[in-house]
Amino acid sequence: MDSIGSSLNRWMDKDWKERMARLEKEVFAYPGVIDFKRRHPHIPAEEYEKNKAALFEYKRERSNCDACPGLENCPNLMQGYQPELMEDKGKVTVAYHRCSLKVHDDEKKKRQALIKSYYIPKEILHASFDQVDMDHESRAKAGTAALHFASTTVPGEDGQGLYLYGKFGVGKTYIAGAIMNELAARNIGSMIVHVPDFFREIKESLSDNTVREKVDSVKGVPVLILDDLGAESMSAWTRDDILGVILQYRMMEKLPTVYTSNYDYSELEEHLTYSQKGGNERLKAKRIMERIRPFTEEVFMDGQNRRG
Ligand code: ADP
Ligand code: MG
Image (cartoon, rainbow, N blue to C red; front, side, top):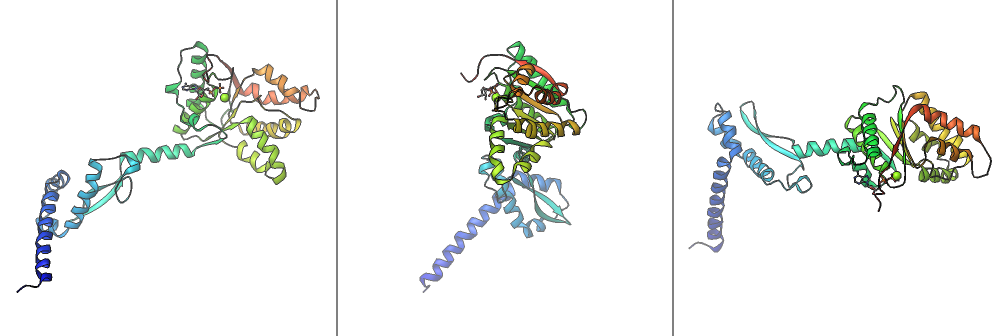
């Protein structure tokens, strides 16, 4: 009489064999496997038998791709990698390569890594020229000038940037974001700095001696965007030793700077003239303007306030 154990074994054995046979049938009926066999008629049938593990692996992973749930939920062993059957010296093996979603995502990450920002809302960093509506004449002009800049500038060549000014909320910062993305697509690094916040941080850095490091991290980026220049509370020190030093360096290195401001050139000059101490420092202001005016095109932007 059989022990319970051995009949259980036999039953399990039978069940397992049936399952294996079914899986095998599925593997050899899988379109990717059929296609591979058709393209490699010289590989003998016993090779497929010997390399069944590879075929199983291939089908399991590739079926995940067939029902792709998106890169983030990719169930494959290596997320974003797709299996492919390969012939290696007459043997059947599996190789992996990045799927199209992964390639796309890697490219995007590479581009995003080129974009740095100080205190700018994330949404701006996804801005694109496709989304800049050209409904308003001045907005169309600004959009065109910005797109032209972003698609032609070569940092180090002539240092020509852009000066975008207009009322609060018309979309200046948004256009700056679109410029950055366009630059990234051309493999050009950029950084956007919200000037009021940056100056505040710089002042606070006096206590931990990181002023120089912070200025250095900004002054040499291929394309620098100074967002909201004129909205800061200016001191003689931030004007001459921070802004002045950054702009002097960029002028020497012929690096383009893009500005957004609520002020036009002459209003900005006026703003730069009066430091908190109340002194009238027209010459100092002129000096800064000499680093801005000749290196930018002044572009006015109008339209409704999009902040509602
Ligand atoms: P500004 O810098 O001129 O004050 P913003 O660029 O901050 O204005 O734009 C104001 C608001 O409108 C922001 O919330 C921004 O995301 C949104 N916005 C601006 N332009 C666009 C656009 N073309 N498409 C979608 N949203 C936009
Ligand atoms: Mg803004």
